[in-house]
Amino acid sequence: MTDVLNDRTTALDDARFAFREELLSSGQLIGTSVPGIYGRSGSFEQVIAGLDRVLGETFSSLGATVLRFPPVYPRADFERTDYIASFPDLSGVVSSFERGDREHRELLAAREEGEPWDGWLDPTDVVLTPAICHPLYATLEGRLPEGGAVYDLSGFGFRHEPSIDPLRMQSFRMREFVFVGTPDAAQLYRDTWLDTSVALLASLGLAVDAVPANDPFFGRAGKMLVSAQLRENLKVEITVPLYADLHEGTAIASANCQRDHLTAAFDIQTADGETAHGACVAFGMERTVLALLRTHGMDTESWPVAVRAILGL
Image (cartoon, rainbow, N blue to C red):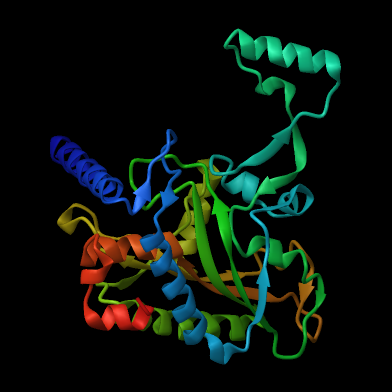
């Protein structure tokens, strides 16, 4: 049994590596010296732009407030969440040089000798944004309007998980539609827009499926969080089978009931003063484009006419 599992894992790694090589040789992605860090071609960005437009149109009836945050956010806000406790292995802290001339000379000498020089750098007051919705919550402290609020977010995120799998990028874009309000309204929002999201992605010719899922919580305590997340069906991923029967499917989007996970940390309340709940539908922009390339081929001009029409290609 162990040999079978090992063979299956090796075959899956080979399939992911082959897909990565196809993306690089076609020019859709531009490789760098670090796994999971890629440039994108003009063709790739055209599909991103088309997908971004379609998402905006699909969710336009929400009347969401459009907000855009940079790919870094305050460390003080980061520490109000439990991200570093749950995902220390994915986190990224920005460091910089904040010392004097003597330390600068020491840094240069170490660099000249080929020795590590980052010990002379100190953490700054910003971190790399791990989830596009996180900067939003720090802006919502206090009471929400009657009926809650909906936000349209987009931007780059970072997670430190280098991999040969091209869908597991360290720097990536997300488009999220976030609701904050009463618990019942948050649950209804998640369920309603999950169905809409599945239909949208299926219209692009993707063999999508909605499956219960969990976040990759770290450590022994994380196992309990995983169990609770699955038991209470808080996270549903929209997956696409990219490697035949070698893998059950790769997530390209998700719909999540966050409950009071972030709202309590930032003291966000409903109009009647109760702790608000959050819910979101999130789309991995690069992941969706990569799923389209895997499904329809590297030449976007040869994609099905209906798919090209939806994306405006």
